[in-house]
Each structure stands twice: as structure tokens, then as C-alpha cells.
Length: 68
Image (cartoon, rainbow, N blue to C red; front, side, top):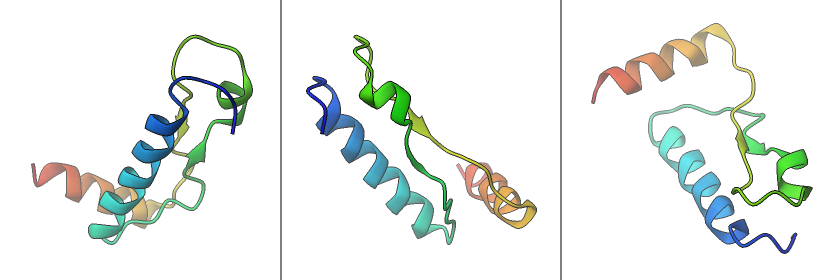
């Protein structure tokens, strides 16, 4: 882990996002920390890379977001 002040928050947010998506039957295989921002010495929190998804996953995301 880097020494970034927001490491724990970002990793917890990543885990929470993965769990929330899974609750809707959605898996984003490339969901991960954006390594350049994680390893960098920026003052902002590391980014979370949502990555790519296929059509079926995109449609499940749209449906899950539309429920709100």
C-alpha cells in the first residue's frame, strides 16, 4: 500500500462498490484501483477504474440505476 492519506477510504469504497454491484447481479471484472493514481504522489484520492463491460452488463447497470 502506498502512503497516500486516502488509501483506506479508497479501498473500502472499492469493496463497497463491488458488493453493491454484486447485490444487483453485476460483476465488472476490471473494477480495480487505477494504479497510476494509486502509486502517484497526488494530493487527491486514488481513482477507481470501472473498466469495460459487455452489453448485458451495461443493460444491468442501466436497470439497477433506473430503480432509484
